Image (cartoon, rainbow, N blue to C red; front, side):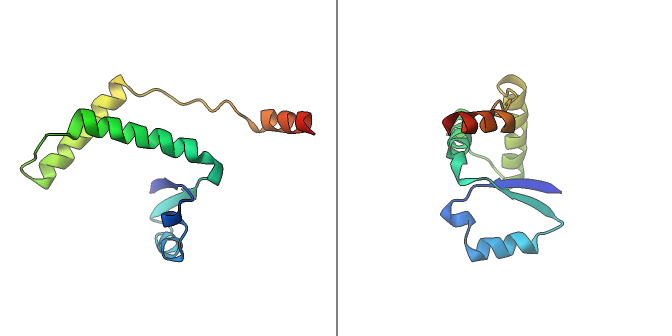
Length: 103
């Protein structure tokens, strides 16, 4: 089963999109990020932009299969050399302490 994370952007919260999500139940797993996660979208956008500039720009493919093969090969290379784990450091307990401190 594939997992997808969608933001709450206008294109992802329409009735048509929600209906498609329901229709894919069991085949795909969807999570809708909270509205406050716009920084996550920005980071993903920057990563995709960098990947496109470094790996795809000015490169022609003779076939769809060749293009897909190249993308998977380049993704493996990017993951090997550039990926780093993301450690979420803002826990629920820290949020609770901050909230109590604010009030």
